[in-house]
Image (cartoon, rainbow, N blue to C red):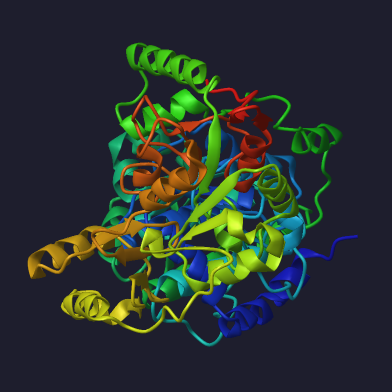
Length: 613
């Protein structure tokens, strides 16, 4: 049986203290990844408090568009060229959460993360390996019917993750004198910065049946809602929220309300993080006061039978699945939106490409590595067993395979770990985006020593405005640039680097991967690996990558010839760089399907059974 709500309230201080002491880095890393572009924050019920707060923090710190979304709203959203997502779910077991996680697995939103109390392995079974899972510490007291400790915990986590030095009191405020009995209807007036508190009030009072609640900001209340309030004033309590910035507006609004109105002023004059947490806890305590007055323990209400059935209603079986196939991905890359004319053009191009590739015979295969052969989030581990198995089979059958990657010595080392030595001579490497080329059976020297070219790149970057927060790794053939931890958003980093190199006249090209920027010599390119494998095989080459869009680090590779496939993002070119899946699979999962479709024929290998639509 669940503990009484009073136990949850008593445990809040311990939960709060443990979260202030917890390591903020795992959540901060996830938020940094999301901060590179627009994002959706997904909640349900009480966790909409978190979704609203995270969306506000995202826009104010990363200066990227954000929105809070319910699960149902989320699965109805279209895929965009770039948009990340963060799901708040304590148990990760609800049918709604499973449906959201399934969408994250299909890479409709990237980067993607989950904030939960479950382990990463547990969530990965549904979300897939490329979704970042941030596991919260155990609660001092498990939540009952209303999410309480978990909300406070995750609010503090978000504030610490987004803000460099958020101001917090050491202890939560002591309980104030209990409010008098609420009237049947409650109007919560709020400033935008305190909207998460208003959301929490609405959730607690409505879900417990303690009051009917409507939320309005101070000025929206002035546009007509005041008339409805006047008609029902005797049945309505007004709770007016304010902090130091909104105090004058709140005072002015409350001052003009009729004297007979039941108005409760909830104000905190400290810094915004302190005010947010303090007023949120007051909302939690209000439910603990009002519940007993109504003869109810809000942690243990009587849930009707239909409510249980409604709560467990499987979302996946009652909604269409939005799958982003080949044509949709081309339209995304084109950036013109939906339209019958362009859809028909790409559908015809897909049919033409499928007809032309069917009789084609390939003697070699060139693969991008991170995001294609292995998941980007697991790039330091060896590829999955299915990928290794099918690549080994193709090599044994006579196919020559090249790997074109931004990696250096680590790729040479890792391939030797899982490929049999007898096959090494059939494998060609293009390290540092093709700047260094050799066969796998050849010895690789030390590539870490700087060169005059790499030193000139590093010196050129010294004047960048973000230089103090950049992690610049210099190697002789490549300079890798990443934002250091603690910098929440990438913004226009790739453009800034290109502009800086152009202004200083230092030759170099910038390519963006899923996790960094690589600067290589102007003559280095992944397509050199295609040319080299074509010479070795004396036949056509099939190339596969995951970032084929303009600006992606596989764009040139997948634009080099018509015979190219993407396991995720495509270019707008209708003659090449096609996604040949149904939208359910991406990355290494889809690569396995591609590779299994390569069948040995008399004059080489043919693609058989792939659908481009």
